[in-house]
Length: 336
Image (spheres, rainbow, N blue to C red):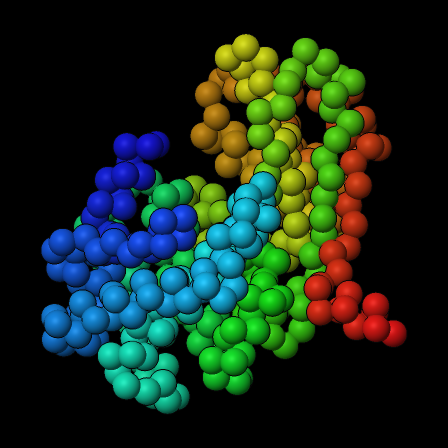
């Protein structure tokens, strides 16, 4: 996994800003490959592509200077979904700024052209990184392609001031990046899940990881197993939250996962779909169980699933699933 990640980065990264050293690094020759090679079709002149890279990375420096972006990432380090959503904001902001700099303005026509251009990014990455797992390439593409679309929506609504305002009230989930109206028009109904209760049943197991997977990576699971245009992808739009606990005993791992949906029918359908995916991809010795308790789904994968009949009731009883109050709404309530 580390090797594939490094290979992907070498083929796509043209530069980066290091918030710890306050230094910007540009990779020699990188504007002739990956994402920036695709950008050349939009900008046409290679010297301007270099300027676009500089503008992009300098925007990251400004994010660090004005919004303390690295501290924001530290706060969501135990939530991959929020982390990816925040990365999409940061990369979308920097990419839009880079394009805007070389274009000279950001009118409706140029914004539309930039957003449309980003739609070609999956093909570009696939052509140059065909051996990289989808689980690595999809999140990277998401940060730029979906991130630009999200930030462009903010810019359309209020210019750079509206883009800056996102950092004071960042999206809480990749679902909002995928569907910007769930941030700008009406906030997505999200839940926070505390998955617990398994300790009394899996007494000899220790927790190895505790994280939130999110709608975007859930979409990747469905696409990878059922196809890029599978109708089941629509189930992800009804995601409200999830929590995944991974426990370990020796070399054995068990995944415990609760996923919440907006309605019981979606939960039931997802339980069927994901159960069939597990049936297809799991080795005979890899046990798995899926149980729906609308509008939520409980999944257990691994040796711990052997005790599912005891495990599931204990988890359902002890775990809590509560509605998330958006930051802006909490501020209004406090003032009232």
